[in-house]
Amino acid sequence: MNRASLHLTRIKYVLAMTLLAGCVTPSKVTKPLLASRYYGTWRNVVPQWHNWWEISAAGAISYTYWQDGDCEVLPMVVLGTYQVTVPPEDGKSGRTVNLRLADGDILLLVPDDFSGGAAHRRVDPSNICMRPDGTYARGAPHPTKLR
Image (cartoon, rainbow, N blue to C red; front, side, top):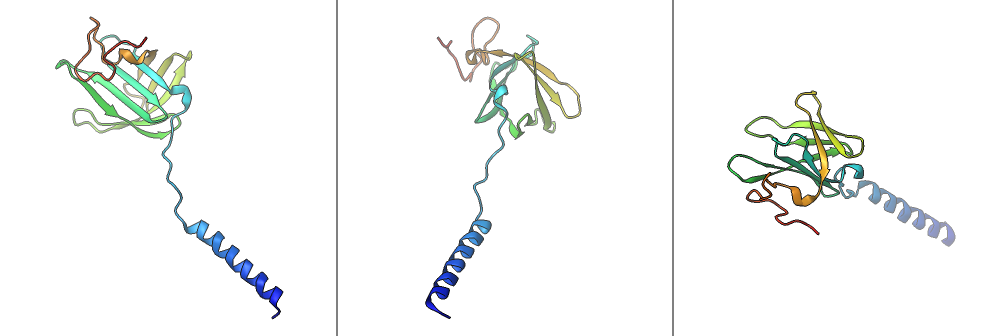
């Protein structure tokens, strides 16, 4: 074997090992993102239902305030560009919800089983957990109006 052939064999070996290492090296796991068209702050269109969703590249969070006056935070699990899992409330099991836009400013929340969907409209983030009288529930994330 001549020197040039030996050098070429070494190069092939190094190249093969580099490619093989790239195949077996674990890649960085990326979490799914919701489509940017859903990004923003949304409030349930039914005034008696005190529920907001905040959606961004960081994920999706639901805010609700109950009779006790506390603003409760429920982080969602993003499954894909238009789908999240809503965590369980009151001991019920969580469920998968599909997001859809209607007329650009209405967010439809459609459960996989088509039960109990909801509609939300875009609002300013300062509206999260704001009561009808303009005060905020305890634990509201944006307790002052943004200017």
